[in-house]
Length: 442
Image (cartoon, rainbow, N blue to C red):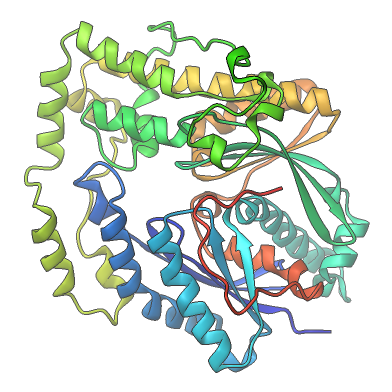
């Protein structure tokens, strides 16, 4: 039986992360180098900058993860890496380095789908809680239960409906365990923008910070969620397409035509509705002034590149050397940044998006007759989403689980956790493993 130590590497977007996880159930280390300060001034992720920052961060981040876990590469059983979906250049940095480490140390390499990693972020959190509970209540082998035993003897191994909701993804999966290996069936997804993408774009439109999710969440607390009546129309099958997928970016990675329209999401419409509201109410100048206040100087792309290239690439702390502005924490700070009508707009937008996520998620849970829902991804950190989903699940008598806030956003612990059953099954990546930016999970 292997010791179960897996080094996970995650570089799918704008976080360079490495972690060591034991048997998919115990996190020994988790290091994340954030690029928020780099991309915030542009209001979104710049792929070229992201790739370059990954190149600078990958070596010190992995070294820090191993040091934090108090192990060396010789102690590992495998190396796991995100192979997609994500930004091609960013993925390639992690894959190339992981392949080099695996080859040099004669270790198996495991490719992990980023979406599966997010689902395992919830499962990892649950297993760690179970392990800690067992440690307190038992004196013998409970903390060392292996993955298969834990999942066969625990109700947490039951099938679940997983909502993966982040800046790049809004998917519903039926997740089913079988002999410690999980399988996934796509139930629904967005046909255009992801929910987190809508948060980011609306925040940018209103002159707020990046990423937009924390800003919208923080400011919505001080607004009236019913002030602006946003609504979502039912997505209908396009008769003229003859059952074929619509030519959208989402259609490239999922058979949308074969999915139930009741479980499809679309967030481009509400983003446009916010834009029209801003134009009709003359909020453009207000938004520009707010953006200038938060980011007084916006350097050119070349200036930013020169600044970053001159930094010492051997210390993880260098990647957080500049501080991005933080969201307001009090009503006074919120009103100093946004007038009350803008706060009401923000609250109404967030309330509508979460309402749509809830409507379709719980409808899918009822249709599939599942008793358990997993909510994961960056948007799962949203406080209103957690509160409303939890309350509705309790009303319906359903179990619901979220990852910790740290595991909600991109991290490598979830990648290492998802790799554990693949290690047991000896499901290793081929030598020619490469990035698959539109990789589907099913």
